[in-house]
Image (cartoon, rainbow, N blue to C red; front, top):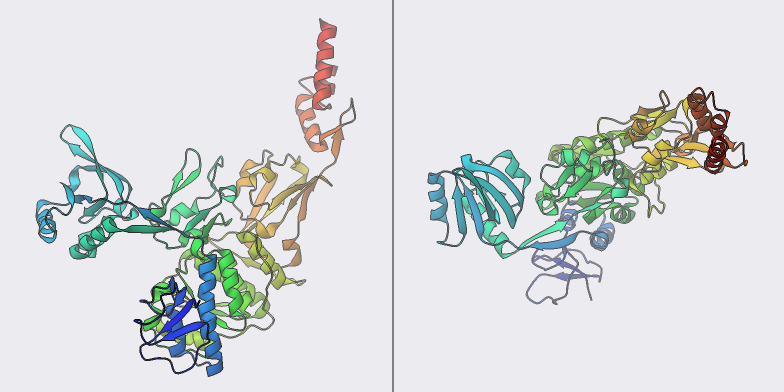
Length: 556
């Protein structure tokens, strides 16, 4: 069964591989479940506008075009195979809250089919609270001396307040037009679906259940109610129905605890394998490739994303290294986080290759310029099996392969994407390992074989939780926003080491020498008049209890 279909009523002037069904009519095509199509109307799972864009604009040879068109189909099939977003349906009934004055109410009633909605009308001044989600909103309104809760499915709010922008299912006719609002409300009642695009791993989240807040950036950049911080317990709460799929939360997450399910890191890697020896042109789907008429030089191959804002330094370096080329990103908006990620990678490439890795364009004129400029970067291709690695581990592994055994100096990170290096004043460190327990990305680890505290700086997020968890004064600090481009950056560095102290009674090693000596120095003067208690300071837990019981019996 063919999974790829190409439709053009005017046909195509070169042959396509047999894996692609080519048709000039949609009436007589086999009713297969197609995976990828170049156009709507074929009932395919994915519509790839980049196929026609490439055919129309590429200056590749005919042989290359035939090969690359098939490759674009395979790329989209790979995206489909690795997508982990789940489709959900929400039941939405016809109860609608109308928030406006009486004149605006009359306008709505004239535009409605009579009695098509179960309509509640209130003026804005009596609305006290609004929460919930589409299909299940609760509006609290003042009714004389008491408050009344109204249960509604959708809301029409003229000149809506900022809070309304955080929810799906609240519409402003002033912004969107009344006819469009009513049409959308009707569509939602008949069939409202949404996708869960956020995958969350709380075990490496740097907000989850921490004693103090050192992160929470995802909630800060979220424009809606999709991510909420529950500060009392330090939990994140997700309203997937309110997610606008903007992608910003993924790019600012330092540990990779948030992942974009339609195109996660495994998808990015597997799609990138198709781009070896090409110049990737990264374009979010909103940029409407179909209408873009621009000459595209040889070896440029479009790389279409749902949104470019989920890209981070790890995914960008993956695409760059897997292609062996500079890449071009065409988008009308670059968030601070993606700009910071691009700056980091470009600084790294400038240090080694003396050229930028990533070229950006926000207009067609800029795009023409960058597509002429884009070139391959000699000896920059890197491929390895990154399956199972976290976000920072992927970036560290790829960066390590770039650095090799050379020293290219240091790179500063920036205001949004943070890296850092933990430093220890070994004289004050007792190896209590509070910092190890605080680090959930395994940048700080304890080695039981040689009683050392070690750091892998390349995966440190510089969150600062180890710093606030350290009980010792003048002991642990973090040098923030720096990446060292040298081999030692990627190896475990010994920060502190100690010997184990043997119990003076039984000889069992039970704690580090520094920890025992610290407690003994603190408690020794207090126990000065009691030699037995003083000795217990140098005993393991079992012997300590035995000595105290023995002394109690002697004094009885």
